[in-house]
Length: 409
Image 1 (tube, helix red, strand yellow):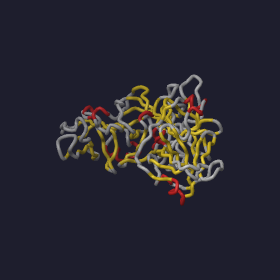
Image 2 (cartoon, rainbow, N blue to C red):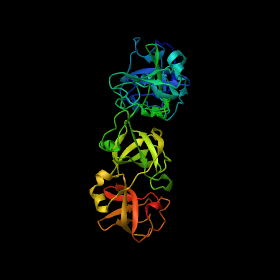
Image 3 (cartoon, helix red, strand yellow):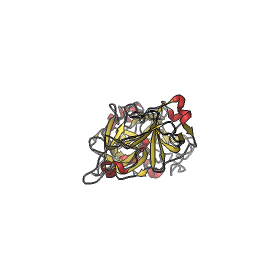
Image 4 (cartoon, rainbow, N blue to C red):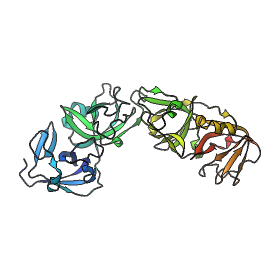
């Protein structure tokens, strides 16, 4: 028991917002950390990550549980939790919105010499990856599950990443790439262990140590489209040819269309890309949602690092009529199509800044051009032309998007 009038202060680096840390507030000051046991759920509403908290220690017990120092109300192991009605007696809320920079350590240090890393602190490992038995797996399919990290050493170290099956991300899938991970460091049964606070603590978009994104199964795009309303299963990738043209600004810079022999799909990345039209692209799609955006089926939001150029190729346009495009829209959405002979009409004379249509005698379909496209101010031809583009829609209005001026001849 602490009998002196001691007050300690720390910034919350671990709370219960995601459910992965339970009834334990993790405070850190400089390079030292301590856990405060509290008998309160959803304490993050008052004591969120980034809030400074002062702890009046007199009357509390301090415990050293395998090197994990904890404060509580009784000398049990673990220490007793501070009841909700006594929180104000021991805890004083301070400034919020503060940040703690994670301390960066080598993975081998965490695995072989856990006492060299201060427990109950926010730490970070870089150039690491989930090992072969852990990548693409759900974080916590059962109670108290562990996945394991490796690095790129010849004899890689291994560190447990602990997740609770009550966490909000329990059924999310671990990434298959290489990158960084951060979380609260503790010791369990003599070994180092990492607890992430949420999925933002994990950023692994890079190629793995073996030069791949892991052993994944190639999935045809039409099978991905069938998952609308759900998520892609673990260990899956798609491969296709980029059919959109980022260089003209036809789409916003974080989006593209990808097509394989079975179908086309719209992909929204978390960052701008520079994948040229005709790039053969492999994309790890494990765990990503298949949804709609303004009516168009999409994969979102995919980490840009999960896309790997593997070659180049071409996509032969589907030569057809406007009437057939409209009839077969659901099957052809996101694919490159071609109207062999049609005329363009519109409310103006340029591709952008007006509402334009294609008429081939069998029907009409809207011709869409972003006002930010490099050719938006170009005048469209009024005679009969061949028009190539990507079949899509905007909230139910069927459209063809041209990629560049070569699409109209």
